[in-house]
Image 1 (tube, rainbow, N blue to C red):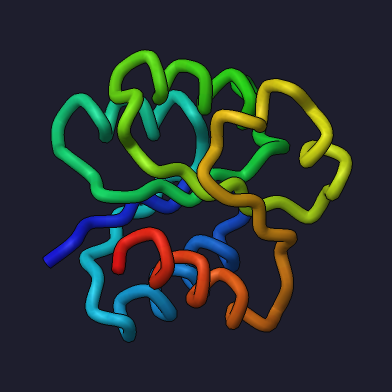
Image 2: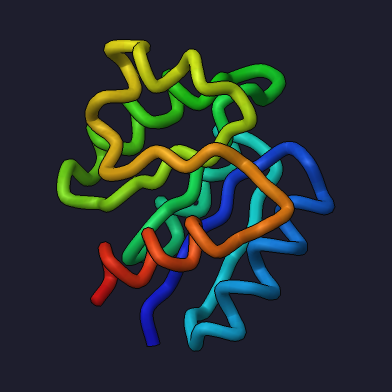
Length: 116
């Protein structure tokens, strides 16, 4: 079973993504910030990460950079409510960019495309 790490400071988003992705047959771990995400990467291997951009302490760009330093092959989907990050050079090493929505169809489709 493929494992996904969901990183988002909003509890309702973490729960929504967890439910949706588990329905698709994935094992899902959720954390609320970038520091916890990096710690989780140290204790387990993930096949994909969904990453929020605006989080306290360490933003998504910094977290993405540190994740790619640890594992350059790890697919990361940026999931944010803010489209301006799409033009931020730091986000370009992500594998996909999804604008948050109550409709998780695009997220589900993107995960399926990346993980097969």
